[in-house]
Image (cartoon, rainbow, N blue to C red; front, side):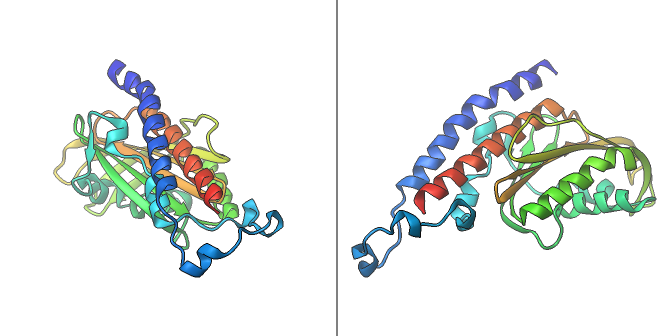
Length: 258
């Protein structure tokens, strides 16, 4: 536990450095322009886009907003594929509509619904205890993000405890709690889901899955951190904080380039 708490604290410095590096790289990239455009005088202040009309992040900018294994250091590494517990345990049928909706959203990784567009995504594996971390940059209307965040906030009460049956028929005892997030982004909500019971082989398992959703201006990020071993909320919270900071930095640089 001590090593993981120290890791959560230590995450702040490396990501701050790499975020600045990523932003400088974006800034240094030459702008694409036609010869005639290069001769055009700069637009007046009144003609420049307002913050509300700043265009969406480019694919390169969205990719730059993602965290990487080099940001986090040991024990994180690029993912080797979806964890077996995703199909074995998370793909399950709950006994209440809101709880089913949560399971479906976490399994499909479509927390903001089918209409949301994933601009960039990455996955990392924790080689110490086989947990996985997934990070998405999502384009979705701010009002829809806030509506989803408000719904997530109700789930510790609506789905505090419930049961779910896996595709193999194993019954899981589920619990949802609110681990809280620091005041990051413009709006945010986190949940912790635990599923305890037997897997398809009859072995007792406990799946812990943290999810953090954060709105930063007109963009949003989703972070999940889960596994059958130790999943520390301090790590999830620290990574979410750094991910929100990186997205804010990329958005700021995008506004400068307009």
